[in-house]
Structures are given as structure tokens and as C-alpha cells.
Amino acid sequence: MSRLSSQTLADLPADVIRPAYDRAAVTCGVVHLGIGAFHRAHQAVVFDDALNAGDLRWGIIAASLRSPSVRDQMTPQDGLYTMLVRDGAAEQARLIGAVQQVIVAPEEPQALLAALASPDTHIVTLTVTEKGYKLDPATGALIESDPQLAADLASLESPQTAPGYLVAALALRRAAGLPPFTAISCDNLPHNGSRLRAAVIALARRHDPALADWIEEEGAFPETMVDRIVPATTADDIVALTRRIGVEDQAMVKTEPFIQWVIEDKFCGPRPDFGAGVQVTAAVAPWEEAKLRLLNGAHSGIAYLGGLAGIDYVHEVLALPEARHFVESLWDEAETTLSPPAELDVAAYRRELMARFDNPTLRHRTRQIAMDGSQKLPQRLLATIAAGLEAGQGIDALALAVAAWVRWQAGQDDLGQAHQVDDPLAGRIGDVLASAASPGSRIAAILAFDAVVPPELARNPLLADALTRWLTVLETQGARGALAAFRQ
Image (cartoon, rainbow, N blue to C red; front, side, top):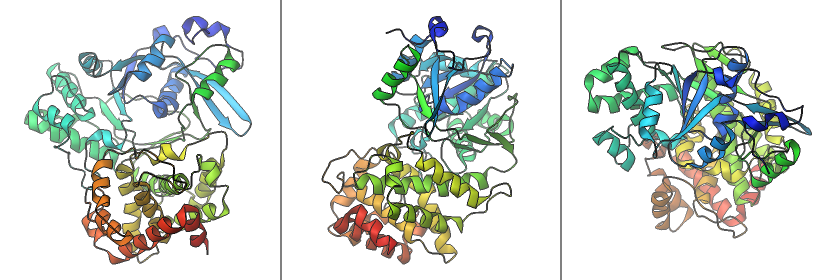
């Protein structure tokens, strides 16, 4: 079977939407760190829209900081890939042509540095997941004990981390008399722009205080909020698309119609004339808070409870009436902690979220969402709990979600099936829990784990009591039993 490529475009069915621009005339004004499915279904689409509108400065040089798999998928296809937008029975296929090159950073660190330091580069975007910033999730400080970060603290000749690449490239730009680029974190970190800025400046200051001062004065690190559900592509998805379009596309992505990108109006150079789905605003925090505490918080609760119950997909979890009741209750608790922007109708947003969760064609796996929980819980659930307790509000649904995460660490679901706890702190958390003999002692051990739980929150007896109660139910009655008990 032929692969999707520039040479096979003419063979595609007429209903496949193609780039409306000459890809050979594109200049790469964007470097993206961490190319994965989410970037290909979100930021790359936004820059593709700008190219389609006639501004040819916004091609993308993308980089993987670890695996060559995406490079190996995309390079034989000339960077082209199909985005399938699924909504019930409706499906739209669109070719995205914005990605011009994919670099595997460990293989070609100097090529990535050259791209970042190029005069053509105006924007650097990042989707490296929460753990890719090498920041303590509780404090926001650099994790200096991390081996890769320790290497970058010693030398930036061949960086190993996202902050390391940014600092090394900014040093090259300053030496060449170029302005800095605008660095935009697109990961679900609270105050992601401020955190990225702090990480970059802290690392720069360890190498060159004058460079750090220049970055502080001249650089730009906007806060952002990104939202689109992008399930992992399966082998069956690739086979089905091959049947539909007549060529094989190993880099395809599937997603929903909804797309949102809220960006703080803080750039230090050119930017596209952003189109639909992008909102440039003076204040991102209220949007970010609503998304983290409603969409992401519910997603984590669904993932751990559904995963423990042996349920594969989000929409299947929500087919249970008791699970829908749990999600609505979690939203009731979270909503009281929000300061939503005037433009956000929270009731309408909740209805829209439930409809998105219910979309059966997305087939969003609970185990995909369950990854990296130690990095996600502080902003998705624990911050909401802290705000609720401070306001004297209930936290029962939020506590059930956190207790389900604790239960997930055992590595076995309620059906006795083993699962991998895919988390950078899995070993340390497993050691902590292994020595605890009861639900109460396991919760006490987790609350003492300050890499995840802020000490002030950990000292609150209301949280300890709620978590112990729900972990006891989860261990004796399973996730389905806990959901049923919650509904009573």
C-alpha cells in the first residue's frame, strides 16, 4: 500500500480537504517541542489555518525530545497527515501541511538548536507533558535531582530538557543580535507561562546572569489554555483510514469538532492573525482554572474510577447513571471555587463538556488519561479541594476522585487485571504505599508525600477523613460500589 505523501495527494478522494497553499513557499516561523497527537490536532491546525489564509510565515519545525517514532511516521509522508474530526456519525478528513520537518532531539541536538536560533523563528510552542518541564508539581521549583536537568545545569552544549533547549537557543540568539522568540507552553500546568519563564530564567542564571537578565527584560512567555480531546490513534484507526482514502497514513490523528486556545496578549515578536478557536486575552487564568477544574478534574476522576472498574472508554463510564451523577457532583463542588470570565457561561460549558465526554466515536481511553497522575492531580483536583475547604464547601466527589488515584497505584483493577502505573513517581509512591497496612495509613503516607500534596493541605483533617473513607469503600466494594454508594 502506498503511503500518504506529496506524490500521492492526487490519488485521494475529493472529499479529503487539502492545504490551500504552496507548501514549498512556506517559511518556518514556529518551532514546536514535543510533537505528539495533541499538537498535530491543535496548535498545528491553528498555524495551518494561518497558512491557508495566505500568511506563509507559519510553517512548523517540530521536535521530539525522546522517541523517533513520530519522525519515522511523518518524514516518509513529507510531514503530511490526516486529521479526522468525528462527531457522532459525521466524519471529516483534512490534510494538515504545516509541519515541514521533524527533528529527533537526542539524535540531532544541534539541528534543533539551529532551528530555535533561526531569524525566521518567532514562536516556540511546547507540549512536553507536565513532567517535561522538570518542575516540582507542588512548588514549581526546578527538580535539580533529575538526571537530565542535572546534565543541563552542568552544560548546555547538547541540551537534554525543554528548558535547556530554550536557554541554549536564547543564548545563541542574543549572541547573534537577534530578539528572543515568544515561548508558549501548551501543557496543563497552572500559570504555565509563568512557570516556564521561571524555569528558563533559573536555568539561564546558573550559566550566565546577563543572559537571564536579557530574557527577563526582552522575552515573552504568555499564559495559555488549550482544549481539545485527542484520543490515541490505534492500529485499527490507521487500517480504517487506509480503506477510506486509499493510501496509508501512519501519522493520522482523530479528534472532536471543539477546539479552543486562549493566549495571553504577551508576544515579543510577530504572531499570526489567529482565526476561529483562538482567543487572545489580557487574562488567561480564569479560563485555565475553569478548564483544569471542570474538564481535566472530571477526566481524572472518570479515568481512575472507570479504569478500576475495568471500563476502557470515557463514554462507556458515563453510560452508568451513577458515574454521571458523580461527574455532575464533582462539577458542583468545583464550580464554587471558580472566578469565571464574563464570557464563560459555566452552565453551558458543563453541558458542552458532558456532550463531548459522551461522543462515542472518540473512544478516549481511561488508561490514556490516567497517565502521569502525580503531575496532574495538584492542579486538577488538589487545588480545587484546597479552595473548597478554605471556603467551607463540600469536597466529597473530589475526594473520591483522589482516593481512586491512590487505589490505582496498586497496579490492579477490581477485576484482578494488572495495569502499568505510568507515572514518573510510580516507584516512589509504590514504596510509600507498600509499607502501609490499612486505608488510613495509606492515606497518611500519601498526604505526607509533599512532591504531590502541598503540606498545608495535607494537614487538613477533613481531607484525611474523606480520603480514608472513600479508599476503604474502593478497596472493599470496588469502583462501581463506590459510585453506587456516592449516589445514595
